[in-house]
Length: 550
Image (tube, rainbow, N blue to C red; front, side):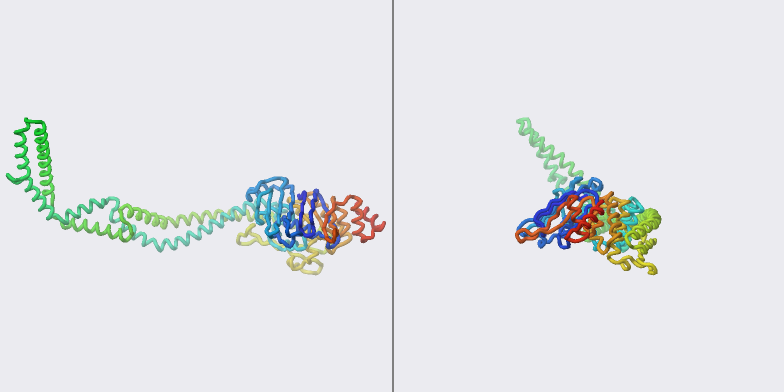
């Protein structure tokens, strides 16, 4: 509920501080006294866009601050989603700066208008004839029926599953699109993979292969040079090994003359042994040399194939080719397994669709069940509000596709007079009739759900007498479950309030100011008497006022 309102430097208001109680609060005042200013200030708090023209002194900041008691509104989850500190005494503040810019705060946390609007819809509902157009909108009509049907739990579950369902459908659509594209690439990827697989990349050592090629391609030169090397080492008399043996023998003759000579002899002996080993290896290499044109052709072909693959895939190493082969294998596997993935996705969608159909059917049955009760209550209240011939027909039809709140279409049909035909509500009800219908619907809703505080802005326009008395009774009854404000010109309604405020203008130093005053009992009698008989209050008007209040 709204507990207090502070307005500074707004329109004709210099500064205003007012506190409100629960129950039914009456606001009266002459036409033009500034009731619309009060509504405008509240609208800013609720998220309406600010306008510098609304500021009284444009060189000063305009501030509008409202305090709400939200202990019974179950809004902790909303505050968390908006990343705002929760407090049962929530303060909303709007500021319009001299520059024309505006700022909004919830519990001292800066917020944008989107966040402010998201919260304010749960706090206070300013109802005017303009808002009665909500009655003709599908989402509002569904909200009314679902509130009576107690469908909230089912609707929440349906909404969550529908989001998953739509997400799965989009995923399936992407998979089918991907399948078409992947099938186009499949044969080419398979060809590239086979090309890489046929060469057995994992078994190839490129360095060894290149060495093998060089040996096979130069076998004659290698044989000739090996023979020459052997001859140099092993030739009689002048061969390197024989010559080295002679050197060793000469050094042996003087090795006993000093350690240095013995060391030289030992070194020569080591070289001789090494040359003997080299000679043996040269023999082995020469023996193993063979001319194999077929092997040469095979090795050359393998090297050529590898170099072609390097060039084709723009890489330099065998490891990179292996990585490309693995990537191709992954694409091939994905394509080959896509049918299974699509089939599994379709099963998941079918299962979820079945669940959605069951929830939608439960929602539909609940709606069907409460519609006759709602129509009966609505027509009964409208009879009391001077519309005895008003009849409603609510058509609920099942659809073959999902919508946001189930699988139903809903239409409120209205007939105002006997002998007329049912027609869409927006085409068959006048503005005054819509106002009374809205009042009746909200009085019914108040029995089923926690409504925000509501302010009726001259909803009684065009009615009088007993009808206005009944309107007041309905608002009084609603105020037992919620905070209700009503701006009225009718004394019968004004007398029903728990609290009564008067909006009036005063001229101070040739400047007009709008003020709001809470009336005591005597002041309230005078105000209602003036509403009955005009400015000049008569004894009969005072007596009538007291009678209404009692």
